[in-house]
Length: 396
Image (cartoon, rainbow, N blue to C red; front, side):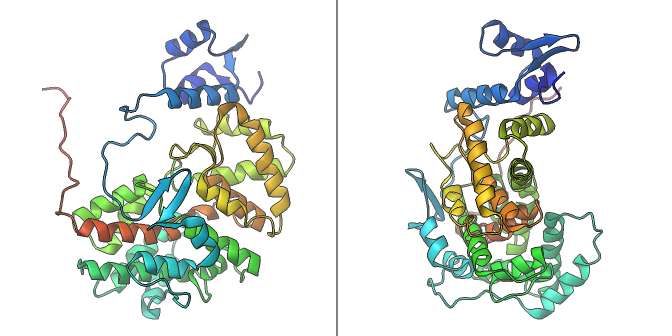
């Protein structure tokens, strides 16, 4: 049996249906299967295309596949005509023309100043670094970020100040402190984060690419992590509590850490694996959608991916990585799924020679600025408004 094909059980699990339903699709001619002594097997790419087709046909009122349970007002990000805007300004322009530090402070209520540099108190950083350095080597970047946020809170005597004015101060401590707690140093948050990940200062091209990645990742509608942060803010959790709650939802393969698998997929193609074979292997291994493809808020390419991929060419392996991305897009053409920000973050890490899980940390540090901006919005609403009521369906 071709080890890149899916068994019936794997195909049914990927589609979220029972095996009987899967075979009904086969009998209607919607899916093809091959049969041998081991049983029925399915082409992962065909299953992926069928899954994408079913998602597009899903009724608008469905709560499956990312449809919202509720609608909340947001004043941070707008997605319109396949473009992303922050407070009315194109995100791609902010990424090209402004630093992450300046954009973050601007979203928290300050003027957009090219001279703005975020900073965290040295004593807070020392306390948190002492704790994080005790973590085992197996701790992931997100594990370290969670511990760093909590210990930054412990070091802050004003941690429980829940006035809206305090949120910007806490956001600055977290965004500027995290890279330095993790061992980085530099004149800006992106440069310090690069140093923490790579152990060296970035080149000009690397600095520009990481800055763009961070600006583009600050916010994106109400992702699950953002909603988790707003729930904490609704209960009047501090800025530290908001970011901790958001990180809990962020640390998931379908959201914050998806770029890890996307980087592995790109690296496999760069190393010579044919794109279709790499995708099939990844689908079989992961048992879920192709990493780095598909974003339901866009008709075409994710605006963040389109903007960030423009910064990849000058990087060490940039041309080879962009060739791999083109091969992957060609292999995925039958699914009509386009690259998303996870693929672009994966391309950045591979092209720059960073660890393949580094994209998740870049995403998390950048998104912390957006979580704080959302907390500011939520603090202006009645407390505990996001406490839903349950409908009991268990035994009496």
